[in-house]
Image 1 (cartoon, rainbow, N blue to C red):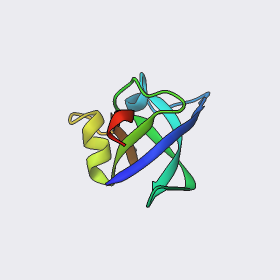
Image 2 (spheres, rainbow, N blue to C red):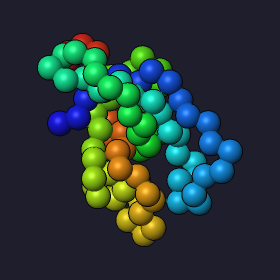
Image 3 (cartoon, rainbow, N blue to C red):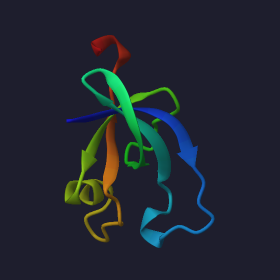
Image 4 (cartoon, rainbow, N blue to C red):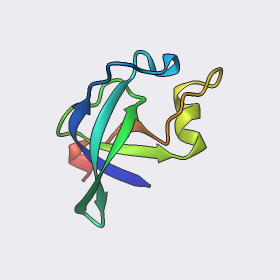
Length: 87
């Protein structure tokens, strides 16, 4: 399970067509409850915002989460937002 906290967004002047309509978020990974390095994740939920704790999927499943017809070049995708009351 990959957990992280959204700390910002990425603005792209040119984006691959298969990523059109998806937000790119800067996420600080959570490892054993501690914040670690920064990663960029594609927001598959289209609802995550700064400060949200999110669940991420990696590797090939990350691209398939976004589209099965034309999988975009994504290594990490946000699959869900963690309810703050469950932490």
